[in-house]
Length: 381
Image (tube, rainbow, N blue to C red; front, side, top):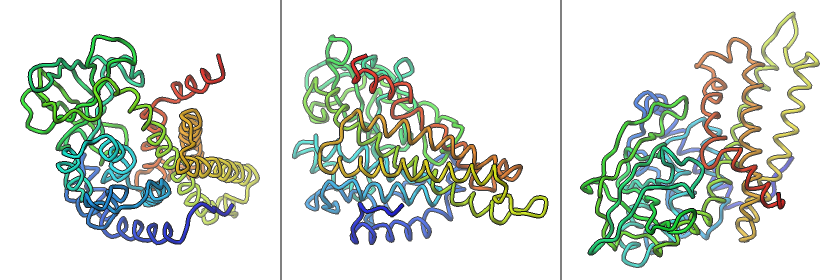
């Protein structure tokens, strides 16, 4: 089915992203996966190419592109089609940029936005804790007000980009109020006394994206590093999480479509009992089912992208997109691996890598179960 949401400007940006990834990322990605981290120079190169910070105002060194998520979707789709996940272009553009752009005051923008837009300032966001995964209300990292700033104590885990980050946006409890109340955002800079990094976590997939543990032992954060208003952290998270979840949905359907295309070609070429394996009715029906589901989900995702641009995308619809697209990604990649037979289990085939990389999609950004809970509550249940 033909997609109609992109303009000629988006198509030109897609060509830029595709060329950049093929020239500067694909040849090195296997090495980055073995090392467990992408070099920071890779993000800076992406910044110089216009693929980081395009949604940051020009006065701060960004691309000055209006808040048009179609550009974000182009980057996510091209990374999926190139079978790469590093450097963290979607992490920076889809997740980090809105916090810095929309919540930073003038002084903070002068400090952070220009190096961020150039890809030279690596930023992570730390929500998840060992005892509070998708439950943001359960965050226990504490921020105590002191003269001139705050003292942070607690720990975070599963933090994407946390090992190499120059600064981390930390979600912490700034008052004794429980639940959703009393959360604030603090920017903790590298070298802060009391801020240490733990292990670079060994993951099943997505190995080129570093993921780490962070610890805060009475770490001092000056008042000038409070992001937004004290006590409004939860509302800021709720404002940005739909965009993050839509980003994952975009990636999910793009990966599914890419792996499907590779599998279709394999089924045309691979022969068994004297015939292409795709000609057998069971396999032909399986391919037909997968293509149908991909097209249907893509149509819904495209509608979500348009509604996000119009300011009408709800957290409920984003939750629907996130859980369905990522669960579909898992199903389709699994079925495609099966159609590859023994070759699908070999890591030299892209479907094998896609299989392990897909597994995190239904966990981070809010598990499938949490997405269903959000939707169910909206139904009045």
